[in-house]
Length: 277
Image (cartoon, rainbow, N blue to C red; front, top):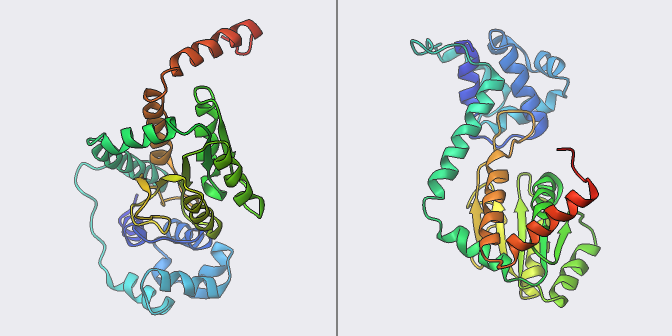
């Protein structure tokens, strides 16, 4: 990756950009040499967005407007790449950022106590609602798929609307004492409402979020943070996915019948020829 592209990527790091704004950012990286000289109209046409979107993009980066962003790009001198470091493109940069996220998760898990506590809370809940709306629905689906093999009553909640509160109430009536929530950017308002309803129903909330300072954080909840990658047009969630698998392991440790249930599933799957070996 050229020094101009590297400067742009560094400028974008740490900013929560919308998909439209990320599209603009990627366009600028692809046209890094020309970016400091493009008008807002030209950039909008290249990125396939509106001119006001370009202005909002510049403001999201902390500038007064697009002219200020363009002046910044013209004024900051290019710096040579470190000696011995090969070219790195935007795709590789996204992968490296995720590797850093996984390193942060590893460091966080050096203290296993919060994970073990969360695993016990989920294992001891007779019914287990698993909540994940919009971007977080994939994480909720993945967890619920595997959890259902060892937990007797897993209830997947991936659709919002007026029925969501009723399904939480139904889980509580079935004996649920905890709810697992996956909350990833951008956070649907319905998630906050659902978590408030769950607390009101007496459920302990365990939340996997991208940050301990996420809008869903609540003093009464057990929050397990795992950062998402923001280098591509849409967030990448390798760390939250791995954290979910670790949480499954911790939950299994709290379920005495987990191993026997897995063995029973394997036996039935073999009888049915469920998988191609």
